[in-house]
Image 1 (cartoon, rainbow, N blue to C red):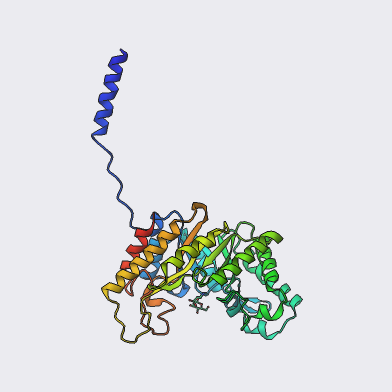
Image 2 (image 1 turned 90 degrees about the horizontal axis):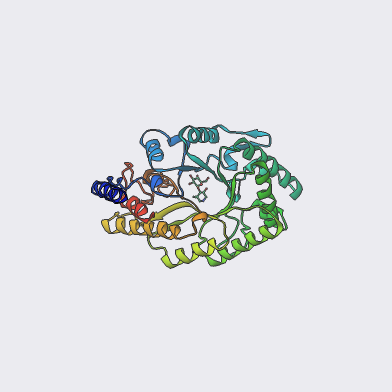
Length: 347
Ligand code: 9MR
């Protein structure tokens, strides 16, 4: 009887073995293949037609290109214009997209009425706290993460002083930023809080200052969960720096966000530039390299990769009529080789 059973079951399993289930086709959709967020910066005015379909098909999260900046929302001391930010957040909620909030504090985005008031440090901070409370609590539970502060350092690691209202007002700007991270945490305890900047992987002095700030926050007890590196680079950006810089950022143990990725191809800014097949392939290779390098980070630190826009047609780099092709989709929303490079880079 036992022998019969063995023979019976082995015959069955042999039979099963010869009819393998067909392997599911490998997905070609970025958000489906990635184990982390795939983001796009969007503009609410463009969210219709093919632009909207492209966002919904390929991406899992969005960043507002300008709608959630202080200059857009804080129209007067007691006046808030929520219409643009609300539209984006409602769109995301309806369609199951995450929203990355960008950005609460940015030297370029303090409204004129605020900077013209020339507040002393106490008034400055209490107004900013009111703003943070209003914005962060309005979107509490709807946003997954916030860039709390953006671009506070120069590439040489010093604090940005030119046109920076925070620098002008505070003896110790870093301590002010730390308290702001705490205000955001208090207003939405579940949101992941990021510091965001550009050139982080290629400018080692800036990176060092960011890491020092993170250590200081940790020592004092100010909350911070992640670092964003914008990644506005080109097909010529040094790959060794990309790898060593990203790995160095990850030594903080924080979440890492490639937060504004785009890669220029017309590096000499020529008026007669033609996007050749060679450059299309170089761009695809560069996207692949960045995604592969990001994939090499510890699993629990891979927050998201966000491209700064969707189609080459509406990139901030082409807005001034420059000849550029920095994104994953061309002006007709067709996938570029860059898209395939990105896809190949995903594990
Ligand atoms: O791409 C954004 C552009 O549409 C806005 O007019 C501009 C000012 O709000 O900001 C651009 O986005 C910037 C981002 O917020 C911070 N990093 C650099 C980005 C490109 O300038």
